[in-house]
Image (tube, rainbow, N blue to C red; front, side):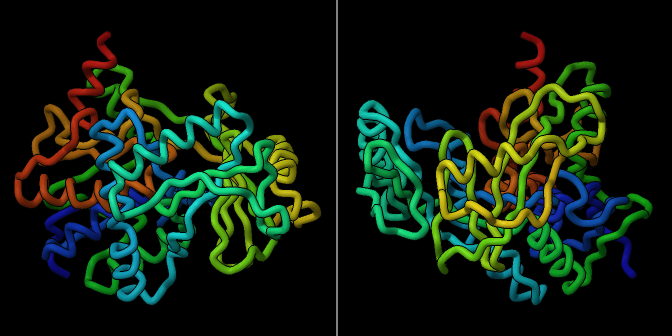
Length: 352
């Protein structure tokens, strides 16, 4: 086997996506992760690829929009090469509107979306169908419907990426020696190591919990987002519900707690889920950079080493864009990292 040009530490969504992009440009890659693909936060069960609201536009939102729009082609190629479905589908999303103020704001955002999203997707206010089987409760009788939101099956997406890399001659290993340029995509542990190396608190882990239910939603059913809760129907006859955001927890490896409260909240929004069996529960730490944006770029003081971390809740949606930006930087020396995503941005925030 030829010596790798690129070593990626971490087989989560950022690490695997960056390795895939580098390999697609001709680099020989290896990915090393003791836990295997999707062992950390990327092995969750929700898989909501949801956009930021179309207002107060900034580089982070623009980057996410571009990434979400390229996701369909990205995952289609991965599926063809690997032979494994990542569970991707752009099925849209419904959001209940609870009062007149929310209804007015949603209509304003519809105008913003028409300008910002252009012909690529829509954000519209619609009347709820009281007879719809997959219909959330809404106090105003209205819902937001956006056509940009997509779903993915996180664990299967990581497995599909790993298989695609292997099919094209790369390696996904549990142990191995670093060779060539090294890209660190090691999640919460990596943020801790980077913080210690640079002497600044650049990020940490935020605990999340989620549930997977046995329930076959109608084919192509949209996601539901209500009061911070994602309800995501997958194509395999399951529905994911999540997730919590917990900054305070007592164990370094998160324990699953009272996740039944998630189901109660989901049933209040979508009564058809009443009585659905719980298939699995998930708890994990999601890497959150101090900037709340992905943390990308060279590792200061370590020539030939780079960082791709901090996906937090938007890692899967950002991954196609992050992969291309990092491949540009590492292989071509071309810096397209968006404002707010740089390690210097995180250092500046930590120094305030």
